[in-house]
Image (cartoon, rainbow, N blue to C red):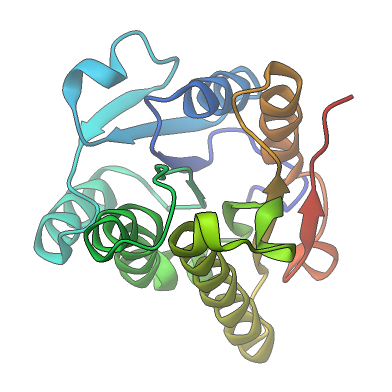
Length: 215
C-alpha cells in the first residue's frame, strides 16, 4: 500500500486548473507521479494542461459535482487530494460583486470538499489545500468582499482540519497564503509546496497555514 511519503499514482483533483497557478500545480504533481484530474469551468481553459485527465464541472453545483465524483470513484481506487485554486478578483463592497466572488471563492470550496471529504478521510494520505490571501491579515475597505470571503474559506478549511484531527484519520487540510499568484516565483513555490503535501506526515500538516513569499 502507498504510504504517506509517496505521491506516486495518487489521484489528485486540481480545481481551477486552467489558470497560471493551476497549470503549474498540475505540471508539478504530474511530474512527481500523481494521477492529476484537472478541473475547470470551461473546456478551452484546460487545453494543454499537464494532467492525466481533464473535466469540465460547475463546482458550485452540488448535483453536477456529485455526478462527476461518482464517476471518478468508479474509475480510481481512491481520491487522495484536492487542491482548490478556484478564485477571482473584484474590489470593493458591492453586493453583486460579493455574490460573484462568493460563488467562486467559497461556494466551490464548500461543495467540492463536502462531496470528497469522506474520500479524503478514507485515503492513506488524504490532503486538501487552498490558497488564501495575505490581505486577510490586513483587511481594507477597498477589498472588503474579497478578504471576507477568503477569511471564510480559511475558516472552512480549519473546520475540516479539526474534524479530521478528531476522527484520527491520516488526512490534512492546509492553507497556503500568498500575496499575488501572478508572480512567477510565488507560483513555483506553490507548485512545489503542493507536491510536498505528500512528503510530510499528516500530523505536521493538518491545520497548517503556510506563507508563500516571492524570493
